[in-house]
Amino acid sequence: MLKLVGGKLEHDTVAWIFHFQFELLLCVEDESDPAIMLARSLMKKYPNVDSRLFTGGASVGVNPKINNMYPAYMAAKYDMLLISDSGIRSKFI
Image (cartoon, rainbow, N blue to C red; front, side, top):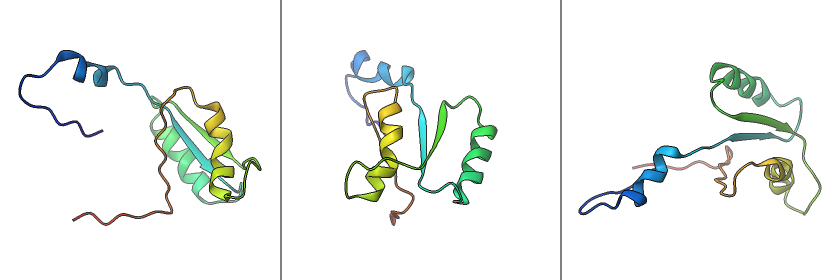
């Protein structure tokens, strides 16, 4: 999270960040995907991160990525979601 602060800072506008809780829901379409091994390795390396691995999906629409994420979406503990797709790359300047 990137948070800009300055001037007369109100406590409530920043304090919530320090109590931020999150979970990492990893979604893999196919159980033979080599990404599963990496995901499990990272979950073991960082046991303090609340994380779960979902394989397969649900047929809820025509978009395969949405289908892949749907079980994790339904299992999410929190109301806010950040979706990060490993198939999308950004170029930072």
